Amino acid sequence: MNKKTVRTGIIGSGFSATFHYEALSRVYGTNVEVVGVHSKDADGGKAYAQKRGIRFFDSLEAILAEVDAIHVCVPPMFHEPISIEGLRRDKFVVCEKPLTGYFGDGSPDYHWERADKKAALAAAMASVGRLLDAEKSSKGRLLYAENWVYSPSIQKEREILEKTGGQILWIHGEEAHSGSHSVDYAFAARCGGGVLIGKGCHPLTAALYLKRVEGRARDGRPIRPKSVSARTHAITRLPAFRDEGHIRATYYDIDDFSTMHVEFDDGTIADVHASDIVLGGIHNWIEVCANNHRALCNINPNTAMQTYNPVEANFKDIYVVEKIGTRQGWACTSPEEDWFTGYPQEIEAFYRTIAYGDPLESDMPLAADTILTIYSAYLSADRQGAAEQVPQWA
Ligand SMILES: NC(=O)c1ccc[n+]([C@@H]2O[C@H](COP(=O)([O-])OP(=O)(O)OC[C@H]3O[C@@H](n4cnc5c(N)ncnc54)[C@H](O)[C@@H]3O)[C@@H](O)[C@H]2O)c1
Image (cartoon, rainbow, N blue to C red; front, side, top):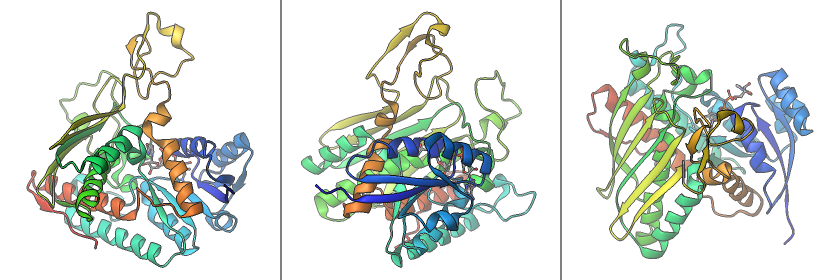
């Protein structure tokens, strides 16, 4: 096979820009040439570039002029403008999660808890619409970087659904840990909300994806979300919260616990929890209860490897598993965390789409359904869990 070459650029030089680069360096079906990086943080961007032997670009325009594709690895409030600029110039845009959202009214005392959630839903919907329009009139495409879709256990479940014609009756899942590292994450104005969007988007998109797979495989049409009921809480901001230093408790206005109950258009259901109040390492899983099988997809932790370490210091140079508080005692040590998380498979698949036009699993419609379900969930939470219809973007 003659491998095509794709010239690519990274936007942002923080946490996600790092694992995107790692995954890019493992792409094997396409020659990927990472041309450079552009970051608002010029010092961080230059250090990122130097470490990897790539160029630093001091503007989005400059990097766009030299690449076929970009990776949008910046806080969510910038996803829409940067993605639209890329699409406008016919680039392929790999956009981190969440696709987009509502980022406040610009006032200095903006506070998510007091925000009008109906207006937030309308604004998120308008943003989704602009992104869909931009993709429609572009020769490029938006590839939605939801790694859960590409994680091996979710892809195995896709195969089971496609080959058995199973019907999913109930999905439940969760993403949780003890708090995000990101400064921006504390502010809904930068991230579009709190844990419900920041973490909840992962298991939610996986659930929406699997119902889409099921519907297409059996009946030739996707099964879509119809309504959602949700509750959100800010546990670490409660006056009664007793901080022992293990859980991040420095959020400004966001929810740190959320639960969503989704009803699909075939009447089946999904329950998705997301929280920042759980100790013991990252907890990312989804369970599928179907009419012909049941599947527990343990993304992280999983029992591919378990270690027992009697002395903390012995493992000082050993990466164990994401967000674990201690390396002592028993641990679900991940021998290949990125692989279980789906990062390399996601980027490999994206570059096959970019270079050869392969079908795209995690696309704009899936991202759009995720965003509209999430903001309907926030509206529901504002109404103490009353069911809200999920608006259709198309
Ligand atoms: N899929 C996953 O598992 C996963 C994990 C973490 C973060 N994320 C997503 O990745 C995105 C970035 O998060 P992060 O953890 O990398 O944040 P981060 O704070 O570590 O890095 C953000 C980077 O973007 C740069 N930046 C900010 N605004 C910019 C702009 N307008 N133009 C250019 N550069 C800009 C910053 O200088 C910084 O280098 C978020 O959307 C987040 O939700 C996804």
